Image (tube, rainbow, N blue to C red):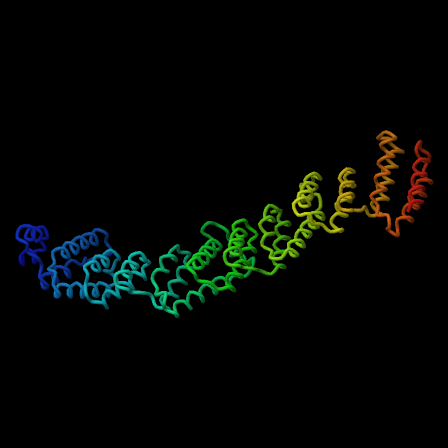
Length: 432
């Protein structure tokens, strides 16, 4: 056996064990292990050869305290020499059930430092090693900064009864959650491997692990909403439902304005449920209608029908409106010759046409009739009557406006329905 060892003849060593049951004593084991370390550890073939020799030596060792001490010493030697250290070799030596707790703890720390958390958990389960609060903090921060997906594994490595570790978890959660500014460029990095994905995953994992801080949860909700994205808003809803997250209603209204301005109206249905009170939700719905009503035609690709449909949908879904909003809509309808919707707005929402628009529309219709006679007499007169009914009867300026319109038509050149129109306006003025 000594001759085989001195000549580094591992096949012969193995045959001696197979045929005669010979094993390596502590002295022989030490010689084999120390000589197995590769001269050039960075070279793949040397490392593979060393691994095989060490594995064989461990299989041939005598199961006594002296041999286990040799393995412990060898493990510590390997851990001291960065050039010879690798996770596979460390795991090989740990699996030899060495009794030296100090060496095993060094191996545990090494595996953690190399991100081999699965192997470290195996050691924790067997030897009860764990991260202290400073090690936990370091690994948590490193995982977050490097956008690693190892957080769940790290959370298996600390002592859950250690109050300093619990404090560290809460500190990290709060620090990470509150650091970025709402709407900052980093938060708006919504790529799969971008900042927000890492931010959301990290916080969600800590929360699911039972780490809870209301300030952190509320901050995370605010950051999520500020992304004005489906992913962010769905996460905000989850934070609200699972962890009772809340945020300033004013910030939610800001998100609504941004979603509309960015033409991301499909996101509004995700923002509205994030309000807590019915009053705030109603105010938000009214604001949405007012914003849509005030948007110019180019916002709707220059197509009136798109504007009308967007506002109709908002009215139907929320049943909330303001006088300002519906009055703006009725004016838009009239300016686009949509008398039917204008009447619907007047009947359903008590929308009224402002007197300036009323005057300009009546005079325009009269001018068109006088110059081009575009429609039948019945249709023309019926349209004027409908326009008059859209004015607010108790508007103090309405009588003078009607008088001004009447005077202008009287001063026009004669046309077939001139007298009829004048009489209609006089009758209407008399009914006020």
